[in-house]
Length: 242
Length: 242
DNA sequence: GAGTTCTTATTTGTGTACAAATAACCGACG
DNA sequence: CGTCGGTTATTTGTACACAAATAAGAACTC
Image (cartoon, rainbow over all chains, first blue to last red):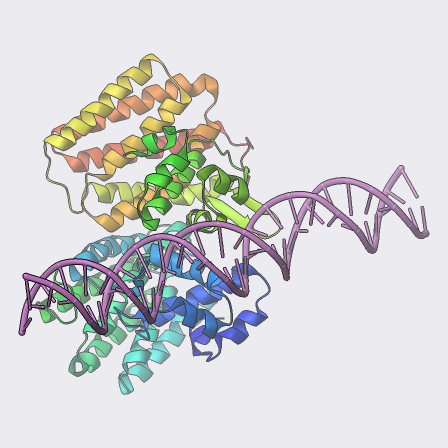
């Protein structure tokens, strides 16, 4: 079951009641909350209520708090006694360092423990190409964001190095919100076009089995994308100036 | 206050009672437990009792559990209902991937956001050199382990990239136990000598302001060290074969 | 004696009541 | 009118009691 399915489900409580172990229940709550934060269902600055969330999920505050605490360790939430649990703001200066690191990690993804290409991988990227074509025809912020997340997870599968996968995922979820928060509506079609171009290029490189090329393409696009962000929003736009 | 001070304190409850905020109390418990795991006060496979720890720290299970849960997310603990909270075993095959990643990250530490050299940095590494000389004169497992930890933290300060620091730290604490668990008593003086040589070389490179050289030296030693581990213990030695 | 099933002790997970801390509100006072 | 101080509402943090799950041991059966 993918994150999309988890989130699309209107009733998380149903899912949780079907889970058999505490670990499964935690995983569901964690995934749902992280997805909502990254899809801007909870925009930066939003105050979450433990009581309300526990009620929605049909559990008490205790197990819910574990999910919130891990998300706080991930840097997506900030809890303070007497104040509340707030979704963190995206700070361009902090994200600059994250991006600098992600650039290098992407290169490693194409170089360390490369996964032997197989039919499954090809199918995965073909599916993404299809979704990219549909997105170009009808640009949409939420669809764009979802494809961005799914494409990231596909790219991660180019390496079999698990720690690298884990580290990259944490950093990805730290940064992926910034696109949704900063891209102006008028720029959406252009950004969609660039992103879908990247998908096509990388899917092609993957099909040829050249993962290092795929990684270089991704690195280049990540770098250019962040430069567009910096130049497009030199002044505040809901950002902290740092 | 360093981790050493935190751990050396025989009465963690005193420290906790002096802490003013919940975040401070969490930080203390987290640091103490992580240190005990990495210094093999709790060797791999040890079962921790929430009740006993909470009693020792003078708190209830609730705040203690937050520290345990983060340590579980770090991969140092594993909690299971009805079973207990166990210190994870070190798996050589898994650690091979971690080491492969750490090799590359060390190189990044010398390249990304280099910290302007100053007097403080020089003093820090001079202190480590001094401790290394004393260690060579009297090899000791615990002193070795402590110097290893402190040297890591000093090395981290060569970069100002915070996400890189955070990622490197998590991976370091995932792997540093393996030395204490695998080094035979007869090999200790030799390993100490090699490690202290590394410190001298890197401190020298840092003194000259050549952080990339320092990073390359560290990378080389990390690689050689892991190779010694692999060749010295091809069969099980309390390790999972994987 | 071996195997199986039930019992029981132990441990973490969950629910809930209360404590602590913060911030907003309100009123008194300069 | 502004400012300072106290009050109160709200929120997370903590303590504790109980539920759920696991594993070890006892007892029973074949």
